[in-house]
Image (cartoon, rainbow, N blue to C red; front, side):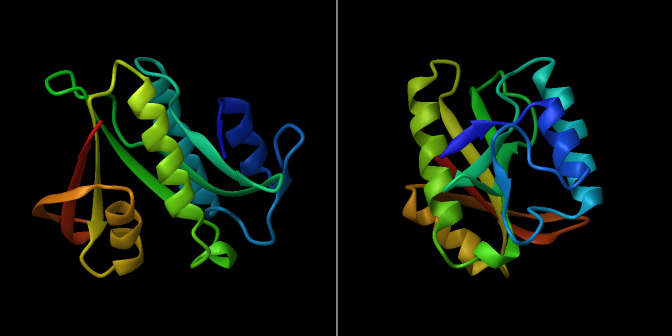
Amino acid sequence: MLIEAKTEDFAALSRGEAPASLRLCDSPVAPPEVLAMLAELADRIRAVFAPAAWMMVEDGEIVGLISPTRPLNAEDRSLHIGYGVAPTRWGRGVATRAVADLVAWAKADPRVHALTADTSVDNPASQTVLARNGFQVVGEREDSEDGPLICWRLDV
Protein backbone atom coordinates (compact mmCIF):
# COMPACT_ATOMS: atom_id res chain seq x y z
CA MET A 1 0.00 0.00 0.00
CA LEU A 2 1.16 3.54 -0.71
CA ILE A 3 0.67 6.32 1.82
CA GLU A 4 1.52 9.90 0.89
CA ALA A 5 4.78 11.02 2.52
CA LYS A 6 4.58 14.60 3.75
CA THR A 7 7.28 16.89 5.09
CA GLU A 8 6.68 15.77 8.67
CA ASP A 9 6.94 12.11 7.62
CA PHE A 10 10.38 12.69 6.12
CA ALA A 11 11.39 14.55 9.30
CA ALA A 12 10.34 11.56 11.42
CA LEU A 13 12.14 9.10 9.14
CA SER A 14 15.28 11.25 9.31
CA ARG A 15 15.14 11.05 13.12
CA GLY A 16 14.81 7.28 12.90
CA GLU A 17 11.16 7.41 13.96
CA ALA A 18 8.06 6.05 12.31
CA PRO A 19 5.49 8.63 11.25
CA ALA A 20 1.84 8.40 12.31
CA SER A 21 0.71 4.97 13.48
CA LEU A 22 3.25 3.13 11.32
CA ARG A 23 6.31 1.11 12.31
CA LEU A 24 9.80 1.12 10.88
CA CYS A 25 11.01 -2.14 9.39
CA ASP A 26 14.21 -3.76 10.67
CA SER A 27 16.45 -1.81 8.28
CA PRO A 28 16.34 1.84 7.19
CA VAL A 29 14.46 2.58 3.97
CA ALA A 30 17.35 4.86 2.95
CA PRO A 31 20.56 6.28 4.45
CA PRO A 32 20.18 9.66 6.22
CA GLU A 33 21.76 11.63 3.37
CA VAL A 34 19.39 10.03 0.85
CA LEU A 35 16.38 10.74 3.08
CA ALA A 36 17.47 14.40 3.30
CA MET A 37 17.81 14.61 -0.48
CA LEU A 38 14.41 12.96 -1.02
CA ALA A 39 12.73 15.27 1.51
CA GLU A 40 14.16 18.33 -0.26
CA LEU A 41 13.13 16.95 -3.66
CA ALA A 42 9.59 16.24 -2.42
CA ASP A 43 9.29 19.78 -1.02
CA ARG A 44 10.36 21.27 -4.38
CA ILE A 45 7.96 19.07 -6.35
CA ARG A 46 5.11 19.56 -3.86
CA ALA A 47 5.20 23.29 -4.68
CA VAL A 48 3.94 22.48 -8.20
CA PHE A 49 2.60 18.90 -8.05
CA ALA A 50 1.20 16.68 -5.35
CA PRO A 51 1.47 14.05 -4.10
CA ALA A 52 5.23 14.39 -4.22
CA ALA A 53 6.21 11.12 -2.46
CA TRP A 54 4.73 7.98 -0.99
CA MET A 55 5.83 5.53 1.67
CA MET A 56 5.60 1.86 0.75
CA VAL A 57 3.77 0.25 3.65
CA GLU A 58 3.25 -3.46 4.24
CA ASP A 59 1.66 -4.87 7.39
CA GLY A 60 1.95 -1.46 9.06
CA GLU A 61 5.68 -1.18 8.38
CA ILE A 62 7.38 1.39 6.16
CA VAL A 63 9.50 -0.70 3.81
CA GLY A 64 10.39 1.78 1.06
CA LEU A 65 9.76 5.06 -0.72
CA ILE A 66 8.55 5.93 -4.20
CA SER A 67 8.27 9.39 -5.71
CA PRO A 68 8.45 11.61 -8.74
CA THR A 69 12.03 12.67 -9.38
CA ARG A 70 10.96 15.89 -11.10
CA PRO A 71 7.70 17.78 -11.67
CA LEU A 72 5.17 16.60 -14.22
CA ASN A 73 6.48 17.13 -17.77
CA ALA A 74 4.13 19.76 -19.20
CA GLU A 75 4.70 18.67 -22.82
CA ASP A 76 3.64 15.04 -22.64
CA ARG A 77 2.26 14.96 -19.08
CA SER A 78 4.69 12.24 -18.03
CA LEU A 79 5.82 11.74 -14.46
CA HIS A 80 9.34 10.41 -13.93
CA ILE A 81 9.56 8.13 -10.88
CA GLY A 82 12.18 6.58 -8.65
CA TYR A 83 11.87 4.11 -5.79
CA GLY A 84 13.86 2.29 -3.16
CA VAL A 85 13.19 -0.56 -0.77
CA ALA A 86 14.80 -1.37 2.59
CA PRO A 87 17.55 -3.94 1.97
CA THR A 88 15.95 -6.54 4.24
CA ARG A 89 12.87 -6.46 1.98
CA TRP A 90 14.71 -6.92 -1.33
CA GLY A 91 13.52 -9.85 -3.42
CA ARG A 92 10.06 -10.01 -1.81
CA GLY A 93 8.06 -8.19 -4.50
CA VAL A 94 7.71 -4.97 -2.50
CA ALA A 95 8.80 -2.69 -5.34
CA THR A 96 6.67 -4.57 -7.89
CA ARG A 97 3.57 -4.10 -5.71
CA ALA A 98 4.37 -0.44 -5.02
CA VAL A 99 4.89 0.37 -8.69
CA ALA A 100 1.61 -1.42 -9.48
CA ASP A 101 -0.13 0.76 -6.90
CA LEU A 102 1.45 3.86 -8.42
CA VAL A 103 0.36 2.79 -11.91
CA ALA A 104 -3.22 2.42 -10.62
CA TRP A 105 -3.03 5.90 -9.06
CA ALA A 106 -1.66 7.39 -12.32
CA LYS A 107 -4.42 5.77 -14.39
CA ALA A 108 -6.98 7.48 -12.15
CA ASP A 109 -5.28 10.90 -12.19
CA PRO A 110 -6.17 12.88 -15.33
CA ARG A 111 -3.04 15.04 -14.97
CA VAL A 112 -0.78 12.07 -15.74
CA HIS A 113 -0.60 10.50 -19.19
CA ALA A 114 2.57 8.43 -18.71
CA LEU A 115 5.05 7.22 -16.13
CA THR A 116 8.76 7.08 -16.93
CA ALA A 117 11.74 5.69 -15.05
CA ASP A 118 15.43 4.89 -15.50
CA THR A 119 17.26 1.79 -14.30
CA SER A 120 20.92 1.00 -14.23
CA VAL A 121 21.95 -1.50 -16.86
CA ASP A 122 23.43 -3.41 -13.90
CA ASN A 123 20.13 -3.58 -11.94
CA PRO A 124 18.10 -6.49 -13.34
CA ALA A 125 15.82 -6.51 -10.28
CA SER A 126 14.57 -2.99 -10.97
CA GLN A 127 14.28 -3.79 -14.68
CA THR A 128 12.04 -6.73 -13.76
CA VAL A 129 9.88 -4.50 -11.52
CA LEU A 130 9.16 -2.13 -14.39
CA ALA A 131 8.69 -4.85 -17.01
CA ARG A 132 6.21 -6.72 -14.78
CA ASN A 133 4.23 -3.49 -14.49
CA GLY A 134 3.98 -2.98 -18.24
CA PHE A 135 6.75 -0.44 -18.76
CA GLN A 136 8.54 -0.61 -22.11
CA VAL A 137 12.18 0.18 -22.86
CA VAL A 138 12.31 3.38 -24.89
CA GLY A 139 16.04 4.04 -24.99
CA GLU A 140 19.30 4.31 -23.11
CA ARG A 141 21.30 7.23 -21.79
CA GLU A 142 24.51 7.92 -19.93
CA ASP A 143 24.33 9.66 -16.55
CA SER A 144 27.39 11.38 -15.10
CA GLU A 145 26.70 9.92 -11.63
CA ASP A 146 24.90 6.64 -12.33
CA GLY A 147 26.56 5.54 -15.58
CA PRO A 148 24.61 3.79 -18.35
CA LEU A 149 20.85 3.75 -17.81
CA ILE A 150 17.88 2.10 -19.49
CA CYS A 151 14.93 4.46 -20.07
CA TRP A 152 11.41 3.10 -19.53
CA ARG A 153 7.88 4.41 -20.24
CA LEU A 154 4.31 3.34 -19.55
CA ASP A 155 1.44 5.24 -21.14
CA VAL A 156 -1.49 5.29 -18.74
